[in-house]
Image 1: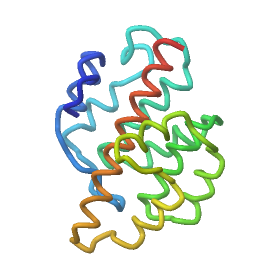
Image 2 (image 1 turned 120 degrees about the vertical axis):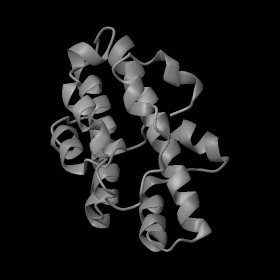
Image 3 (image 1 turned 180 degrees about the horizontal axis):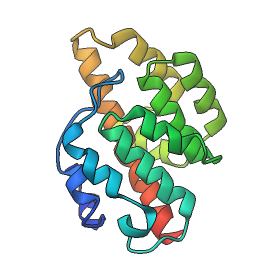
Image 4 (image 1 turned 90 degrees about the vertical axis):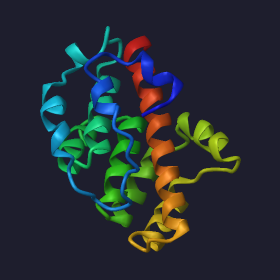
Length: 171
């Protein structure tokens, strides 16, 4: 992750983000090089302070998801009963791929505050339900549309992770 905000993350999170990778539209292959680092993370050691434990847990779910450990991500996101938990849960199911389940969780999310920033990134309204359909259409096609979906998915991950990290640390 090479965004301006990446430098604000803890020394345990930074090595997990240092590898630039576009997330697969499907489940992908778990990045075993990062597994030991991911397993070592806890809310207590991954953040300078924790003001919102649920958001801290969702950041951990997001980091597992970033490296294609869908089951580990799912175990966390499904127990956090908040709009942000539903959002991460929906992303995981979109990648599984389980379109119906993904849409269910995105409906549970409602109008998440991160959606506007995602929309601003692409100068158009971002709709997670519509994006599920796009991913279904272009997954594994090797097309420019598939590449665009991967880029959108990466930006979605970055924006939602930044939002959750800020809430975890600052409340």
